[in-house]
Image (cartoon, rainbow, N blue to C red; front, side, top):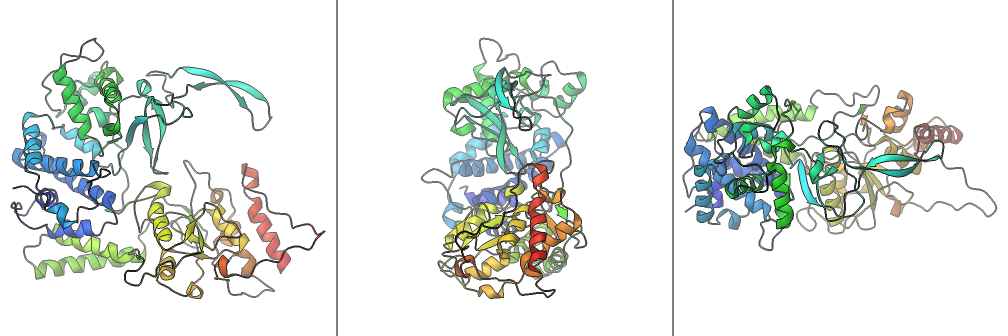
Amino acid sequence: MTTITDCLNTLFRDDRGPEPSPGDGLLASAGGILSACAELSDEYRQIKKQYFRLIRTNHPDKGGDTDAFRKIQASFEIIRKLYEARAAADGIASFTDPTVQSRTVDAEYNTACDDVKTGTNVQPWEFYEAADDVDEPIYRVELAKSNQSRCSQKSSSYRRCDQEAVTQTDKKTGREAEVMKNSKIAKGEVRVGSLVEESGSYSRWMHLECWRVPSKIWLGCPEAKLGPQGADEKQLKLAAAGAAKSATTSSSPSTTTVSTTLYDQYVSALMGMNEVLLSGLKDLPEKDKREFVLHVMDRVNWAKIQKRKKTKKDGDELVGTSSGVAVPGLGGGAKKPSPDTAVASDALVTAAKAAQANSPSTSPREAGALVAMAIRKEKFVPPVPGIGKGVENALAGLKFVLTGTFPELGGGSGISLGKKKTESMIKTFGGTITGSVSGKTSYLLVGKDPGMSKVSKANEKGVPRLNLLDLKCLCEGGDPSDIKPIQITSFSKGFGNGNGLALMASAEEMMSVAAAQPADNMITDGKDVEMDTKPAAKRAPKKKSAPGKSKAKQPAKRGSGGTKKKTIKAQKEAAKAAA
């Protein structure tokens, strides 16, 4: 009898240790890692990492054990399908749920093993190597939701999207002129996009016929050994190296007839990539799904193999944007590990040795994984209303603005890292989230590499800052007056190649905005004063200007590059005037 626990044990087992037996309880390493995850998507991400680690070392192309490979592949296929169906009425909420772990999957497991035996669900080693560094599906196929998106295909070497003349107004001169732009993607038409790591969302949409199938995808297809049609000798050698043998290779989707056997093999291969490299394929109507599969089958559409670029990762932690813009003299944006990280590393070594000493059967990897996740969990455990110290509606009436990323909570990627979970935590305690700072904002929640623009605006409005630990304190009924001023050491460099205000600011301006107290409250008659940490809902209302008196001129809003510095300049002038 095969259960979900058996599948998880197969994926989390130690290569050097004994193979888990059916009916054994969940391995300590699996339980520790999964229980430390905040939600199902994080659990699945950890399972995928274990899967890719094992599948590459046990792949037959590299002399691995065929039986072990079959079990690993079948176990992951069971887990993948469970995760894929998470939105269904009977979908799972967590792999840590005992009722989920005890679920029997004999029939599904045997079918998956048979698929591996026949080669239906087997990809070449190169496919797993290319997909190993993927945390989230990097491509999405779906039906266009509106008529607003335009095709982003610009490659002249493949196929240019049909262009159309569009009237556009020049921002500098105000003149209208006709420019050529790629055609729009009609509502309901199949489109393919890619994940933008910085935002954590899908963009760069293309018509299906304009999309070049990346090597990460076609390396896992039945005809991978043939390579792209028209490829040079070097590309063919790269594609053929270790590629799985295809049952049928004579058919081509460019002809009027397509081999049913080959088509089914492609469907199986692509569906196996759903929630791994692809997303949305399962949700397409059958007609559109067939159109997508036929496009992938045509090797003319395959892109050349690109050399794999090494990406920097912070262990098992989710990493967000690259190092921000350091505030001069404060050591921000440093690449060396923080004191907390160093302490955690020392504790990891000590605790792992202790775990092995207490339990000789515990492997080094199991002990290390358990302790690493325990340390990570200790760093920040989100409070829950009504449980433990969590006070229900503790944030009622308070308005928050978020800036920066929150890797402590995880989820998402890039500039969206941890934000959804942070927002969810605030809302469960009765708080409100707004997108921009105003006089009604209670707190600016500051994460890693916050935006200089929002921090500057908060200083201008006298809005106090707080971090995740301060927020947790408030959720547990803490006193707002206990919140200490936060010194910022680095700012976000912005989106893409960098459009953040910090990149345009001088060292003096950055230090002024980053200071622990807002500029208006920092200096009064040459003396430091205490920052007002009361939330906006509890602060005394501002006096309205008397009739006939004009209001003070507000600093210019962010617009063109020249106006970005005006906010900081106005702040400094206001501080001098107050002095």
